[in-house]
Image (cartoon, rainbow, N blue to C red; front, side, top):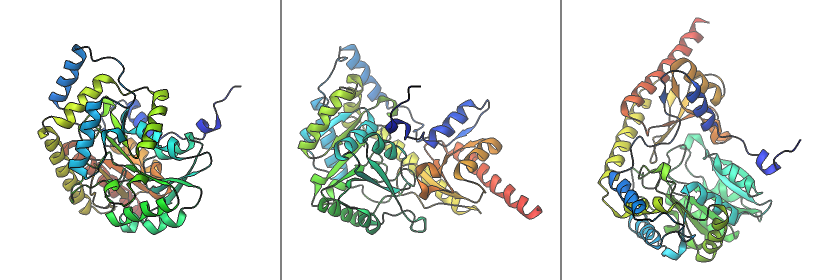
Length: 391
């Protein structure tokens, strides 16, 4: 029997999608808090810009690196909002942040080299390392510290086999924003090891308690930082699939060459939509931001008042990483909540071993959905405690 390659067979399916599929198969209404999908539509002026571009015949291939106007808009946004200095020539437009990450890993990880992953972390990093014939190395961060970045722990694991370190801030799944100093220390150490830091900053525009600053702006070695960004989360454009990769021009040129052989270019109409998102009215973005901030406050306050449930207060993104006092693995707990309480969350162990026993809750849903979902979690914990007492 013919079989796929080992690099493909070694990749495990995301447990986020496992829960998503179970929820889709359930023949009843559920509270869906498992996927990081903003519950807002794309702003109307962005949709209109795309429609205008399509009607005007802007439906053909673009340059592999993306429309010059879009790369200029990205460079301006990174400078104005996140203090990152890139020329348009240091940017390539990709099919979402996912492709940008994939290309960054392909460009920095040689056969057998290591991608260091402070965890809990987004599961696709493991898959992308394996697809590059690299070795994903999980470096657990401490739950007691709220999963803050422990630079010493990361640096101690670096070696001549290290190709890159991936840092996601704000974090998916914990919502934590790493402090500048440990990020700076990791970049400095990576430079000493002739390695890169891949800065996954797709949630940087959703930073709540401090001014958002990109990792490339925090170090004296920006040439060792590859910046990944996206329109998906901040602009409610997940389905448009527009992201970008920024870095030293020599590497970005090479990445663009690979991009030609993967997807050629991001969709032309979607690129025109992204230009409108980045350069047009920002009031819809501000409204979404305020809604996420309000939900963040609600979730944090509600969890703090609950017995048997806790989480670090999210600093950014739209995730809370819950420690729930229920027996079994994270997947067991998630399935139990779906089966018995009609609420769907993502299992924490799907984000690495450091996430075992936890659940990721997405507050990219309405306050009503969050209230119902948290009521259900609280009820499940209380029922379990009652069972223990009765036994």
